[in-house]
Image (cartoon, rainbow over all chains, first blue to last red; front, side, top):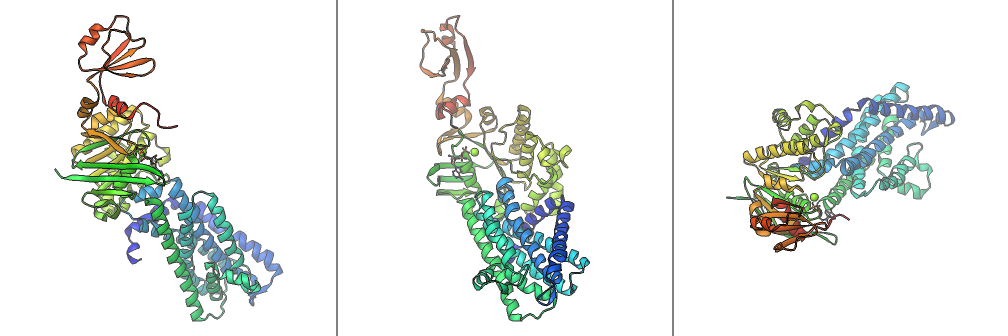
Length: 258
Length: 296
Ligand SMILES: Nc1ncnc2c1ncn2[C@@H]1O[C@H](COP(=O)(O)OP(=O)(O)O)[C@@H](O)[C@H]1O
Ligand SMILES: [Mg+2]
């Protein structure tokens, strides 16, 4: 892994950064406006009905959930729809692979870039929420960021694995229905997953999102965290990253070169 | 002289389709070699196998001393590819496309900054350095793809239909630059559908169809081997008194191939409508691969 994070992978990352930079303002605007709308709806809307959750004001409860959602959605979207466009529509990957750059370096560049998009979203949520007054502990918020980065890598890995199998755009509607939506609904973004029946809870723990929320929410609202639990959650996120990356790599190797 | 590319018994099957069925190749350093064949002949697949972008089903390849599928990075850096389909980066400018490729080739920033203006100049794109790729004409895009392939100063350049779809001015400009590359001692392997282009640029030609080599040699050799030196295209009805040895029926007219043209011209009745020209590579191509359309 260490040898894959090199200047070739960086060249792929930089290519994506340069194209993003051309629309930096519209991109940042959507990254800021989205959380504002969400916080407005939940802070004023739901917040006026549900006053507290897990013993804290609902706004403080929902902010870590929205940060996790922002990271998950942006990194997944970048690694699927955007990456697929580069792969199949613009043929950017073909061009890259005709150079000394290898497929694994290409995928590392795409993986890290997609995770960076996730970080952009969740950081925007954090900044907006802090200004709004929904972040009780700024230190907790900052501590959550490395965890969000690890989780974004896991989401990006899963997205790239999906892209490796995708044959058309239709495929991604399944990805959104059966992967993104469950992580939005069942991973504790809006309420504690303890309220779900057992079989849904079992399913929820398969989703990397659940592990992310389970770590960053206590961190941000100041609840106790068991070191062993944190280790398990982070370990799960790291394992998802590695496994999904390997699946993407092997699938694309066969698809591109055989 | 040492061979830069050597391939023997090259085969590739996609599902049930045999795209390449046993191609042998040996290309010497500094040569320009043309792969000619109708659509679907297997030219692109062959080139992709040489680049290591496609694993051969059977056969052995050596390119610059290495096996393409496990080519060391230093060897890979000595090859430039002009793919059949433009895959320029539409989100980047002309200059940024070249700079990005320089980074994919692992070049230092200082080297990239030195080479990019040279290549823009070489391909006459300096004026458009800041333009978005989507605003370029077809000819400019092709020139940019060629400039991009040259970013690592390669010894071997593989060009898949570098001039297809271009106007004559743009083609002539690309020919000139390809000849300049040849003079620099680079080895070129190209495909084209333009026989005049192949005749002008290539030292050696491989005629391929249905995934196999039909014949190879210099353009002169091929013409000498497969057709006679002169071609007379004669409108029907044909005059009865002509010696119709080697002919091809085109429907409304007939092609007559002869070595010695004077006696035929003398025997031609005055009312006959005909056209006389020297035989060329196109005649060989059509003779070897047939006249029926390949795309249905
Ligand atoms: N990836 C692929 N999958 C399936 N069939 C392919 C693939 N690539 C090429 N072919 C088939 O192989 C044959 C040769 O194609 P190609 O090498 O592109 O020919 P050419 O470049 O001479 O036009 C064609 O019949 C084409 O349809
Ligand atoms: Mg082709």
